[in-house]
Length: 84
Image 1: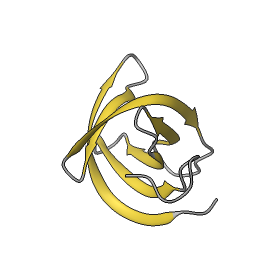
Image 2: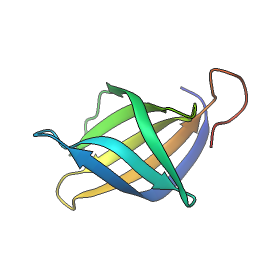
Image 3: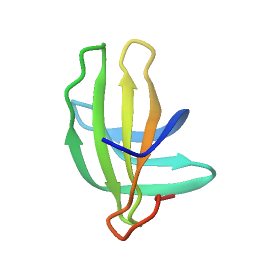
């Protein structure tokens, strides 16, 4: 998987028993999650590939122990170039 590697904390609004992200704020901009895919993760917490309604594609990590979310990387958009 290629893309821009980052390690930024996200402000995430999540819901449901699995606390999956509905939206998040990154670089001061609100992003609504359109598609979510769970990825393999050997560490604690969840790892997901997200696509937002504005075309941003990224991989985020959930640290369940600390109740935090982190941006792992931004993936090339389906339209070309980096999202965000």
